[in-house]
Length: 114
Length: 112
Image 1 (cartoon, each protein chain N blue to C red):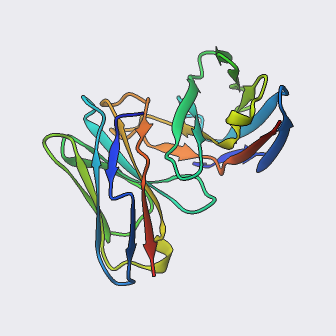
Image 2: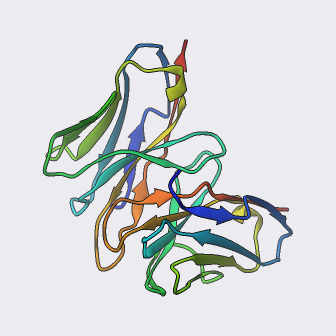
């Protein structure tokens, strides 16, 4: 019940295209859903996050779509650029007790071809 | 830059040895968490410290231990190192119970 399932494992997109990464969760207590971007040899960087009271959040070229009833959320990268090539992780957390730990998906390796 | 700094960046240890990793949290952040990221995997929660107390722990054995200091910096200690402990160890900081969590660049540990 603590898992976050992420797909696809890898994704190749042409420059200017739309990259879509999907995640699903089981634990309905999750109340915060961030996406992290990680370049090789670096730590994960917070990209964008959403709470379950909204269905969509957009920041620049990055959009999170959230479907509470289906317990699914997705990241859309519009006008994908070669510089977006990285590993993307979805995550979920719940503030239970005093711990706001993140449960991560398995990651999606995105390659944007020029 | 997240303001979360970790040291050392890389280290190699022998099986059975002990290691200490260090982290300085982002200014003003009083909560520090540690995660283990094996190659090709997502980060796994080890534990979290708030006001110098351990507030939550993931599925890691007791040989993984930590400390948080009054200035909110933190240490991760791993005793009796095993080959499977080879991973990127990430420190993350946040403010109290807020969900926004920022990661450092990590410490790469190789156990041989």
